[in-house]
Image (tube, rainbow, N blue to C red; front, side):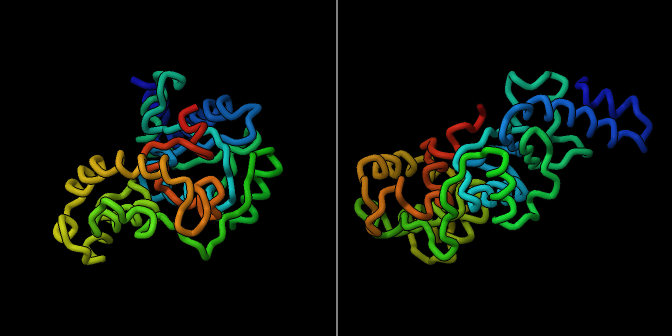
Length: 245
């Protein structure tokens, strides 16, 4: 049995939450010590595993955050003690959790962008310009039409906006575009397989097309922190550079 399970079983019901939270906090603070910021979430920034984690990833991008250490509590790896491997399923812990300057930043998901950006900046987190809220990623028809079917182009555009964390939502959105082909009756499972086939082609286009139709490269694009296409094809960059570090 893990440390969390033992602690919860040994403590009276009324104290189980406090015991579990204390055990977890001791571990998290040890990980976050002497670091500007550490994010604990279910999944990765490229593929959040639940709505809260997806919300957290988007919020951090909106601050202009470009470098952050991330711990996937659903797949914690060898650096996490064996007794804490099941932490993501504990009924007494909620994620994502953001530790800034070694301490948990409570309620960070409810902070406005400017307040969170200020908290990160004061802790020494590397920040870039805030992305323009009115702009959207331009990976669409103009950038990827050549060699792709209309439904494939539509899928690329949706992935750049929504990522690949929620295949059911992507399938619904693609069907709503009414672009024909496999999109007409696609399920989440079918769409995920189609993306596995399409992703290498998209990656090749990104690597050999230094400039988008808008005139920006991926590195200079003002919406690059909101665009999730690089994450979806496994092209590690910027904030994802330290995922799993």
